[in-house]
Amino acid sequence: MALGVESLRVLRGGRLVLDVPSLELRERRTTAILGPNGSGKTTLLRVLAGLEPAGEGRVHLGGAAVAGPRDLAYVFQEIVFLRQSVRDNLGLGLRLRGVSREETWRRIEHAVALLGVAHLLDRRADRLSGGEARRVSLARALCLRARLVLLDEPLAGLDEQAYTQLVDELPQVLAAFDATTLLVSHRCDEALRLAEDLVVMIDGRVRAAGTTHDVVMNPRTSDVAKVLGYTVLAAGGRRVAVAAGGLQFGPGPLEFLMTVDGVVAVGDRREVTGRIDDTRVRAHAPAIGAGPAPGDRVVVSAGRVVDVV
Image 1 (tube, rainbow, N blue to C red):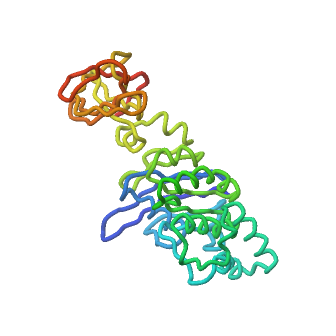
Image 2: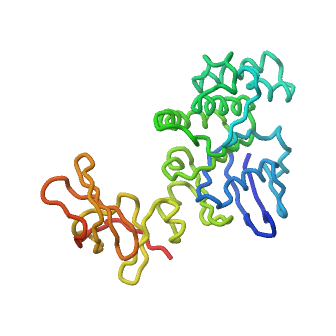
Image 3: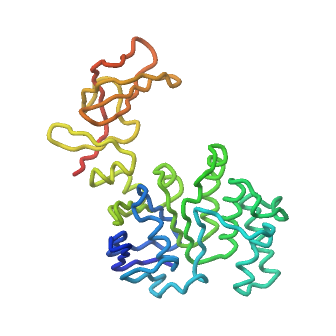
């Protein structure tokens, strides 16, 4: 069911930390909340889950008030397990909901097969590695078959290999939830891979919302553009956002003068770092031929840019 927020405000120590006049997450889709640290992402998730009170406002699921834990599954950033087996941890929430033993086992079998953790069922859950714990935590949420799934940085703390493996598998897991799913992330590339819709939060406020493609391709303001990985530059009286990797060494449609700080060979190209005015930038240069040196003033260019305010 669709999740809606109306006139939501959270005060903490007299300071307004969350101010969301209106937000609707579309039914049975995955929405990523993206923003810097302190932007209110986790606070919003906790309010939606009923773990933190809202000073003002209303949260509803399919037009009705969220009915508490039975409506939702929550995967915390800091994973906590009971000192029991993985099997017991997976079954606990189902037993509390009155799910039969046969149905509990069917759900567990399905979840552990999908997450690749069937071999861990008899292991103590509090002795899992970071990657194993992340997978089991997702399996525990999947077993609940909730209408609303809240995932707080579900890939946090993983090494590069574990991260790459799990992020490749997560689209299939998210589809299996078959729920309205909200995923908190601070990585734009992660949101692009996992979420159909995107919400950008800055200073406790929603600054952009829509399909992931539309939000990423058309940032309206410079602060939203920066969260999405763009570099914001001045160009002839305009402010323009250049996507990551969008600056190239040499002339082009829109040119800038760059002061080179460093040059590093990366495969078949050079990565040139430096400054355009006071903004730190990176540009790509061919690996062949004479390259720029620190201190040089060189021309770099961008093809596609987005005007921002």
